[in-house]
Length: 364
Image (tube, rainbow, N blue to C red; front, side):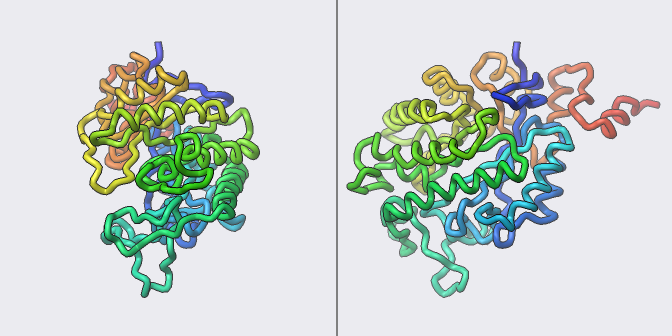
């Protein structure tokens, strides 16, 4: 029977356990370039014992950054820094993964600890975001995105493909496309954010076209033996929650046909006032329904913090992988604590040998 600390294989990649370090934006890059902060951050997470360490949301173009501090892989000069991080993750025993995406109408803001507001027009570093339609994320905001032309749509899909190719060149073995959280790809699906009248708007099939075409573009450069996954916002909470979930199941079926291997089940978050029912493990039932409905392996995050519960979700086949973010920030060696909580006899084995040796012999 599968368990939280059992190995997991997807295509040609095997994780040492089912614990994933979820993508967590650090906002410490300059011009998209990684630095010593990222090198240390990701190596610590890998040495802590996670099976898969995902590098944070990485912009496919300069206009796709949430903030000026976002990481980016839109040009060749950025590859080396990512290669060093991927190598450090792998040497520490984890599989190096990366999430790529475009912030869409949420782009061009300050860091969250500085308020997260759009950069003022007076800032020389400010830029106008792009989106399916010229509709702001926050009602009444003067920070309007420009509606994408067909040429911009095609160019952005190619940006995803080029970034995926650079991620492969850098040594990443697991690729996640960000189709959630109110970013560009998610907003193409939204009836509120997408009021286009061309082939990218209107019907669900048209609104899903950008996502499907993006997957197909990436498939042309991403090798078949490595997992191609998406983080997908499956439910928009509110009066139409079940209707949005039903549409998501339909779209996920199309993405499966396009070649997606795994779904990281997440939130829509396209409305700043969305009434999300924050509670422990609240996304797990949705992930289980996705797994049952479309027949793809799934993972989820969002307030999963207890090792016994996480293990139970895997054993019951509700989840195939469990994504942890703040839990691992507060304790990068949480996988070791999880092994102790689960009564694993050789709990130290989840850690690198220089750690496990001393911990196993701590009484001598």
